[in-house]
Length: 265
Length: 324
Image 1 (cartoon, rainbow over the protein chains, first blue to last red):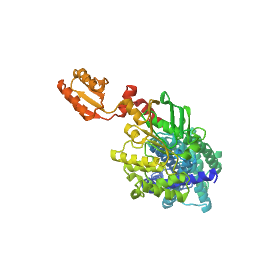
Image 2 (image 1 turned 135 degrees about the horizontal axis):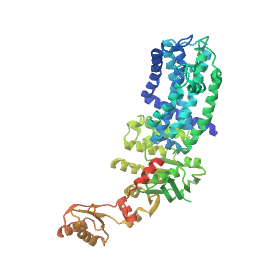
Image 3 (image 1 turned 180 degrees about the vertical axis):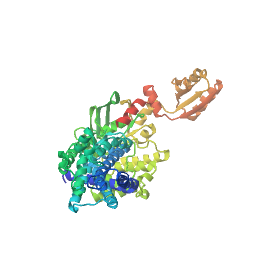
Image 4 (image 1 turned 120 degrees about the vertical axis):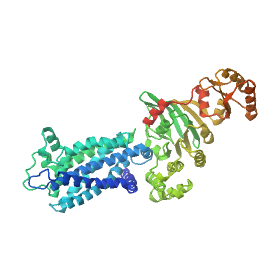
């Protein structure tokens, strides 16, 4: 077997270990599943009537944003999982084994996709209950979900890197909020970016979270007819812009994280 | 050539020198005990030899492979059991060993068989399919040790394998370790306990502040620091001088005194008969003792004898925690 195949096999072994953990500590999974439900219900019923979307329903507009926000939040699990392994000394055991240097990270980011698949599924079901619908056919919708998952996967590499740097799980849980809140709120997730003032608007327009949200809305058919075309390139080409970000994030953070893992501490 | 060979290992964490020029040689099939207090640099040395950290300076080879130039080769030939039982709490004992076997690339079926075999050998069969979080400290250590030998590596590193264990688990662990090395494994063991090094090691290197301060067999070291000791604590500072004179007549002149704790320590070779003489002479001199006893030499005595200092070094200990 060549080294790439070994790396894949090692990653599979690590991913399997993480999946066992998901089963053994169901509390984590429970919160992963409850929080998106809470978000959908909160925004749909608390803000649902106070934010007007010209020609459409806020609830339909909202779902794409909540999808994007939730998968970005989900990436925190990757960082927290790695920080936990570092703290408990398991990473040192792995690092002294003749296994692939990328496997712990590849296995971790891969197994965390499960969280995102499940939370997207739960959110979609909750969305359907509160009145969200897919209008563009299942193929486009499937592509929308795939794009959200790919973006989540890329973002989990960012948090993997953070997880290897921070000294403890507590730190990463707090630190991630500082990054994730602005990223998911200064965007078109909950309000149209045109409604934001000056600098915030520009940030929101170029924010990759806006692009993935816009792409999802577009692919689910949740942009009401008559809505003015976006005026900036990233939102006009949301799918392409999202894919570019996915590639750039992985290209930067995967090697950075593996390098950090090699040298850990 | 020695199976483990380290020359001039230096590791700095900022201003703190965790290792300051350490040499180690362990011939094939031998057990080296690396003895020292917390923060002496034991874990740092193990971490360098197991490729976890890079030394600031120095070279090392393990089983013929250079730890800096071919760390991958080193990892194939070593097993490591660390200070903090690095097993996954959420996996069962079996799942832990199976995973490690797969990561050593034994193959699916051999990894399974090996896992069951080790659980049996380490007396963990009954707990094999329970998550490790339900294990006792001793069971975790045994599982961790089993993890280190999954691939039957020719070289083994055990970093304080019994620290924090109760006396019974410690004795059990010694039995397990002795069994292991009966088979020709080369072992580097770190410990804070002279007794442990004595029980297990062929050769002992005593380190402090990242440097070797003594080297020899357990017998050599004991000869160096003498046999048993009598320890006397007197009730008043005034009595120290007189008590010291009395003890000196038994120890051939050597007595350590501490004014603050009013404690005197003197080597003694005559066993309990001599001990009774000491008590009688103290009584005859009208010295009231607060506490008195015989005891075997400890690591503290080694340090007192070798460095004239007690065995502690909090500064480096903290640095090592952060650094390793």
